[in-house]
Amino acid sequence: MKKKTLAVLLTMFMTAGMVGCGSTNQGTEAASTADSAAVTAETSAAGSAAAASSEEAPLTASMTVWGPQEDQSDDNWLKTECEAFAAQHPNWTLTFNYGVCAEGDAKTNVGTDPTAAADVYMYANDQIPDLVAANGIAELGGSTVDQIKAENSETTVSTVTYNGGIYGVPFTGNTWFMYYDKSKFTEDDVKNLDKMLAKGKVAFPLSNSWYIASFYAANGCTLFGADGTDTASGVDFKGDKATAVTNYLVDLAANKNFVNDADGAGLAGLGDGSISAIFSGSWDYENVKKALGDNMGIIAPPTITIDGKDLQMKAFGGSKAIGVNPNSKNPQVAVALAAYLGGKDAQEAHYKMRNILPTNKDIDVSTDALAKAQGDTMDFASIVQPILPEMANYWTPAQSMGEALVAGDITHDNAAEKTDAMNTAMNTSAAQ
Image (cartoon, rainbow, N blue to C red; front, side):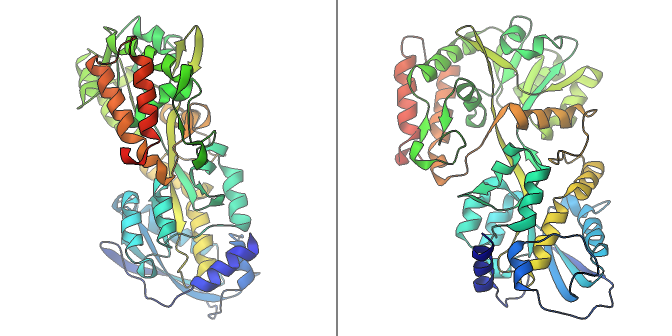
C-alpha cells in the first residue's frame, strides 16, 4: 500500500495554481522561522499525521481549504482549527486560503478541474466514486488510516471505504433515527414499532426510497452483499424473506395509526399533537424541539415484529469526511491537515461550535440524546449505504414500491409478485 500510494502521488503532483470554490477569504499565515523544504517521498506515501515536533523537516506551504459557509461564519471553526494545526507544526510555515464549498457540492466543484481545486476539502461520502473517477481524491494510507480505524466505528470506516481503499477522514455521521413524544410513549414502547402503533400515531416516510430499505434490511435483505461492496451480488430483495417484509408493510400502510410522512406531514403532526413519532435526522432537531419541547425523545430506530420475531430496523448510514486532493503540491501537509480536521480535537470543537455530531469514539456524548441516537444508529441500527454506481438502480423501484403500498395497490395476494418485480428492477440498469 505504501509503495502504491507513493507511486500515485509522485505521478500526480502537478503545478497548477489553487483557486477558491465560491468566495475566498484572505489567507492566514502561521508564523515560523523555518526555511522551505521539499516533502519527503516516504512521509508522503505513508500519509503521516505525526505529532508536530522538531523531528519534522522545515517546509513552507500554502494550503487551500474548502468547507461550507457555516464553518466559516461566527466562531469560524475552519480557520480556528487550521491555525491550531499550524501551531502543532512549528517547523512548517503555513499559509491558509479558504473557499466556500458545501459538502454536497464537492464532486462538482472538485471534479470540474481537480488540478485547480483545494488541497483539502469536505465532502459527503456518497460522492467518492465520482471524485475517484475525476482523480479528485487521494487514497489514504499509513498512520492516517490507523488513526481513522482507531477513532471510528467499523460502520463509519466503511462509509469512506471504496474498492478496498480509504478515501477520507470521517467527521460526522449521516443517517436517520426516531423522534417521539415522551408524553405519549414510554421507554419500553419505543423499542418496538408495533407496540407504538397500538398506542398512538406514527409517521414514517414509506414512499421515500432512503427509508423503506430499513424494513427489508431488518429481515436479511442485502444491497451488494453483506457490506455493500460486492457488485456481483446485486440487490437481494427477493424470496420469502423479502415477501414477508412486503406483507408486513401492507399491514403497516393500512394501520389507522400509521401516517406516510410526505410533504412535512410528520412535523406538522408533531406540532398539532396528531402525530406522536417521526423518523428523521439531526437536521430536524430544532424543528422537533420546537414542536415537542421537554417531551422530545430521541432514539435509534426501533425493532419490528415479523413472523413473531423482533427484527432491528436498519437505516442507511453515511458520513461527511475530509478529503485530500491527489494533485496537491504539498501532499504531506494536506494529509496531515485532513487527519487533524477529522481528528478528536477538531471534532470536539465542531460539536461545541456548531453541534456537528462527532464520529470519534473517544468523545463522550452519552448525555446528549441527539448525538447518542445518531451514534447508536450508526453502530447497531444501520447498514452502510452502498456507494457503488449500480446503486443508482435501487432508488426508483424502491420509491415505486413505497408509493404503491401507500396507495393500497399492494395486497397480500400480489405481495410476492410485486416484490419479485421490484427486485428485478433493482438489478436492471434500465431502472435508472
